[in-house]
Length: 149
Image 1: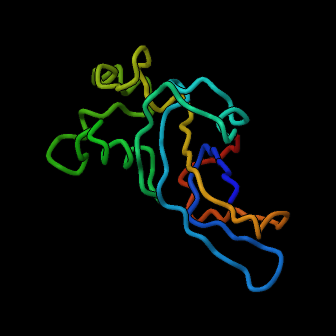
Image 2: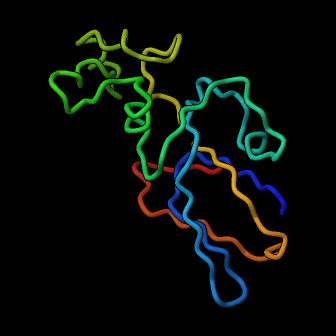
């Protein structure tokens, strides 16, 4: 089997291996998540089968928004519990400044953790019998926008 690495700025919930009938569908659910403020490499580097990161990546299950993944990893407390939502920076810089939320950014030197995109990354196996076949990525719920590395 040949290892293939896929780096994405967004998530996807399934992968279709197209070509010969029948079509196989493989659900990918285990991903790693990290901000591009931390990960400086571009998508081509992240997609390399030999890529090894010097930074920590948060394990997440997709579908998952960035905030849901960070809450699951205890970076931020559950925003639906009490006033925990006031311990999470907003996407608006002016709102963060007005309510002093910048201090809660988990990213060093970044007062707004939502300014830069996040990477979702996973590794999956492609059987040698599928070599040369067409692969389609099926996205069933991009929350905001997606860019591919």
